[in-house]
Length: 211
Ligand code: ADP
Ligand code: TYD
Image (cartoon, rainbow, N blue to C red; front, side):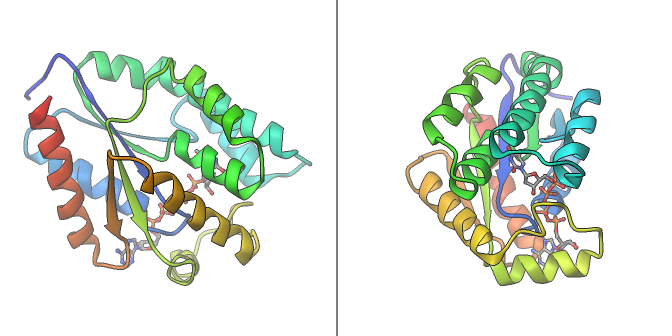
């Protein structure tokens, strides 16, 4: 297995049902079969603490206000960076994370209306100032995502039960956020899983080779 001095941090972002988890699994399979040192992780829920926090925000069995909701994701992120991301970067891994800080900016900022400057500051603090080298944005329409969530046939999370207007705010949020960045790979999530994975993989390999 090839290992480098510095790792590569890749986040995958998009609305629920856009195909992020499918893409993450496919990328990990192809990159690892090419002999690259890849690690699959996610937010929320990659650590033991995160598993508990994830269940709290997904099931919402008690009232959780927007600020508390954000801080639960921030706690998950702090633990994720301390326990998984920073050590893996030090080991020179390619880290593929199914969601990261931009999900908070979009869901809690654009979606819930919390202060985006505050979210940016706290995100940066939880991540020790580290940011993804590349973000893969899987863009789909709300209709496509909704159809896929139904087809997936799993119990709806609190976020999947949100009104259409909430999902539209998320799409506007992701589009606006990533239009202002230079390290985002926009993927047309309406394409086949193979097409999306090939496209994203090429960007990751060229960033890895450029390290
Ligand atoms: P997310 O992680 O973004 O919520 P998933 O990867 O779980 O989304 O995908 C949601 C559903 O859509 C799954 O049933 C998956 O098999 C299917 N799916 C994923 N990507 C595609 C695609 N490009 N085209 C059609 N169906 C897809
Ligand atoms: P998950 O099952 O991981 O969703 P998916 O597989 O669709 O990515 O649940 C995570 C949910 O939490 C998802 O609806 C997005 C939401 N979320 C936030 O609201 N803020 C955040 O910072 C993160 C990381 C996720």
